[in-house]
Image (cartoon, rainbow, N blue to C red; front, side):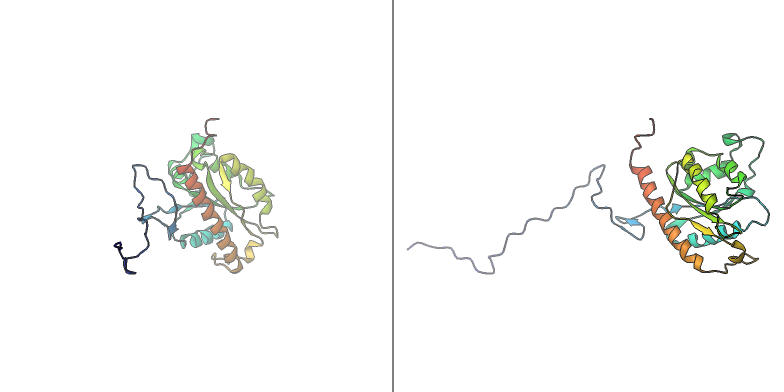
Length: 234
């Protein structure tokens, strides 16, 4: 009789393919961009930088209260750095225009920024002339960065007509307006004399506004840093 080789059940184990470990090259390709609390593969991302601009120089401006409220709420967001920029304090002269009157500290702040919040009142269906004058002092610093607008008015429309007029200007700068804004009508009933918020319903609006702004700022920063702009020289 022939000799057979027996195999016990303990020995008869299914073949398991070896576990492959991806190699790391000099220029690794990210297969899965998995983020958790601002970390990418154990490396912490740099914070988003989103300043808040007070967009008028008039005395008694109620939009300053709105700007300080948004700045305070933005400062609570993890992974975000913010600062309050008052165009009244920039000292932009009015006897010339554009780059000729550029303020280096303001330009540097916009260059660092990943997005910006502009707060402005509505004056006769429009935005303040000084806001446009100050914004015109920069150009390339705005390119492909997110922008959100917070408007106030003493009447019932909340500055919506001002936003409609401002949006084409922001696009001309190369900024990318988000789909949300915060319009505050009857502003004297929303903030007290010391700037305290009297109507907390606006906190919900600001929360959604900031969530959209942060998402857009992250998306555009990724594009600026990782995707070539083929239209740049055309």
